[in-house]
Length: 300
Image (cartoon, rainbow, N blue to C red; front, side, top):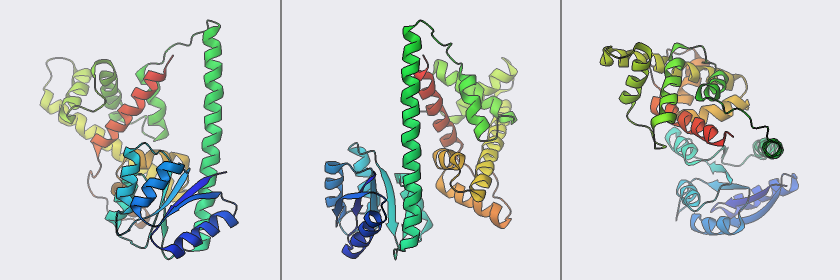
């Protein structure tokens, strides 16, 4: 059963949320607090699975509280509560780490629907962890028996990720793979070098020594931009059809800025003319690099 913490300076909201959670059988409220500072202390002390937290509080707002909790090692999930509809503020909250959003005044039906999704995600996560544990045990058993598996290449690791986003056939994907192979083999840091250097890496791999690096680098940049934009469009189309689709839920908030996702979904939904090339390429490549690097390090 999930455990919940509620941080809200409105006592009536805290009580209403607690009643919805416990009477609806969604879990147990193990901590409540009336301010951000107090919420920070009780959450660190009790470590609930999920924290419902108000965006605006007088002493320490919800975003600041979440950031402080992250810095101190709390790894639970967050649901933001607020009556504010400001897109920038909501985007900032999502970047801070919230996964869901409840509007005030609190609507019981809306909260119950959201908590149902939270519980489903938790059950799926628990199930996947059990599968991973079982696979890890099997892997250890195989190693003990001397059946060591062949280590996958960077290309073999990255292609399923690109396939999930629907861009494995794009010309820019070849450039992205070249860049990732170079980073894993030669780069010693988890942070990316300047994009211009990465474009030149792909340009040199494609054309060889002696090519016009500036010209080819710009061509690589355009191919990658089109490919990343295509990934964003594919994911937003999935999200418009099914907002809870696992591909959309995993890749859209992880690889793209919240504002870009919302803008692209609005463009698609309302048939608006798209803004040219509006996408954060560095974030996309940085997240992809970290994901590939993590998988490489986990290889036997």
